[in-house]
Length: 121
Image (tube, rainbow, N blue to C red; front, side, top):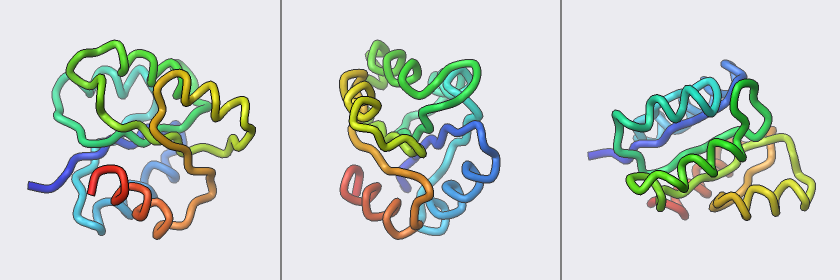
């Protein structure tokens, strides 16, 4: 059974590119357009990894991470921030909230896959 990854980004084009890259590598992908959408979809699925943007309307990536970490079912699911933000303060805020790692956009598909493979195999 292939591993399941949720990609959360308010940009449809980024979501599609990430999803395409992951599906080509054999992963199952669940897409969400913001943190609130992601949380509503978490109840119905067993995830191996969450890739989330930081800056999104409705609920940003930091709030999403805090909410996921409060949920016993998904408390230990690795979460990678995939964002244009590269300031160390933002990275620290993400880490404090419970982010596992950080990839700066724009990303190279091979880089994304290398990180995913390191985190979940």
